[in-house]
Structures are given as C-alpha cells and as structure tokens.
Length: 116
Length: 111
Image (cartoon, rainbow over all chains, first blue to last red; front, side, top):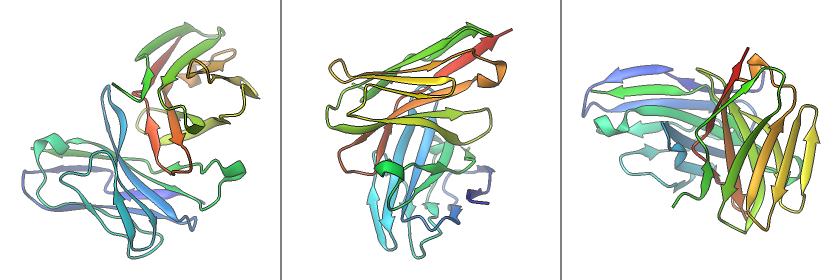
C-alpha cells in the first residue's frame, strides 16, 4: 500500500531533550516536506526537500533540522525542544511529475508533540 | 496578512449543499487544492483545479475559481454526516512545489 508513515504518532517530552520524528514514504517520491498544524493557523511548512541531499527552509524553520540521506526517509529533528513547538506535525511527499502537473502531496497521519 | 484565507466554521443540515469559500492573494498561483482532514487523520486531497479553469466537477464536489477576485469555492452537494471534517484550501505558486494553506474550515453536518 502506497503510504507515508510517521513515528511516533504521539510524544510527550520535556524542554531541551533532543528528539527525532521519522518520516518514510514507499512511493519513490522526490519531494518531501514537513508541516506543523496549529489551531487557527492552518499548516505551515517547516522544511522541504526536492531530492536526496537537497533540503531548504520553509516558512517556520527555527528550532528544527532535517536530513535527506535516502530518498524514502526525511526525519525531523528538534535539537532542544521548547513548549512553543508543541503542535501537530505532518510529513508529506510528492512525485516528480504529478497528474497534469498537479504535484499532489500525500500526507502522513501526523505526530502530536507536547513539550512541557 | 494571510496568503490564503478561509472562514473557520460552517454548519449545514444533512442533505443540503455546503459551500466553503477561500480567498488567495497571489495571482501567480498555478494550482489550487482542496484537502479534507478527518479527526485524528492526515490530510487527504479531495480535488484540485488548474488556474486556467473556471470550474471542475467531480461527483458531489464542484470547484469554482474566480481568478479576477482570487476566490475559490468548494461546493459539496447532498452533504452527509461523513463529510464533517476540516477542509483546507491551498495554493501552489508558479513552478514551485510548496503549498500555502489556509487556516481550514470546520464543517459540521447536522442531522
């Protein structure tokens, strides 16, 4: 089954304790992206990757890191989490060429992170 | 201000039509999308429209695009309780891959 998976789905941690949220897709997609979802703000892009070893900042990159060593994986790293990073995080992937050029993005199920 | 704006809430009666509206600011938007998010789930693409189109229909869904006013709408005919969800409008600008999302509209379908 074609899908984007994220782990963990839920995480409660303390300020300053490094954590990694994994994201993996089995569709051989070139493009991958991380978003955070906050009430009333919709989804805001954190980082994205156009291909292996190519990453770039989105709209809200502060406090986050990513890496893209393999095509299928795109982990999100919080080196020193803070309470304002409490949010719902989504990973998404997109093919190199979409239907009619639409570049449909496929989303993972989300990771709910709480930083105390 | 926000690039993409939506009202936060909409309630309709089961069997009625729902119309969810969205405005965007960038005239270079090439594709506009509607995503659905059910409780506890990720986003699922419902439909999209290319910027040179005015309308797209897909079963119960009708998308209308007014480029002059930068206004996008999603009409759901014969709304069912299973349509209760958050609906996000998103735009893609030019040849970029990034999407800019609205804040989402919570649709509640009343019996």
